[in-house]
Length: 178
Image (cartoon, rainbow, N blue to C red):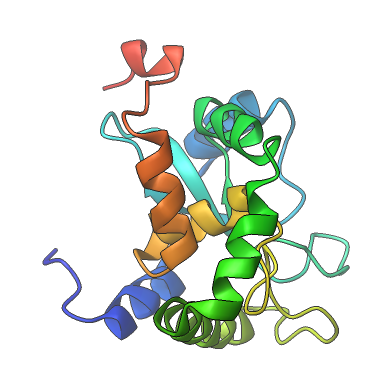
């Protein structure tokens, strides 16, 4: 399958993903340490084929709003991001959004595309806090923003996180994958 040509094509491809099969669900459960609470598709994989990001329905299996459209399930990345978050960097990034016009515009446009996808999925649209990670006005959860970027290449704060995490070591399970 050819690579998507535009950012809209990337979101269309995310919308069209099939839900995770039993084999992926078993790996996801192992990576998370528990089953998912929402129906999910594998939105991104590591180079060895393991799921790294899930695209979740806007509502969980009980019909309650699910807080994350793109869910980072890579434990090594999640741990490294937790360390980054512990520095309080989200405050600095939120302040940067207030002064950096280009960053604010890119983050806002990314938010609009995120919402358009989320609202197309079964269970959408949601009322109340419409986004994940603080979008579009603040930076609240780097895990969610990085997952959004991994799945779509369309989140400037997620891209910043990727630079901070580079190089990213593999999860031990990668050694047995493929």
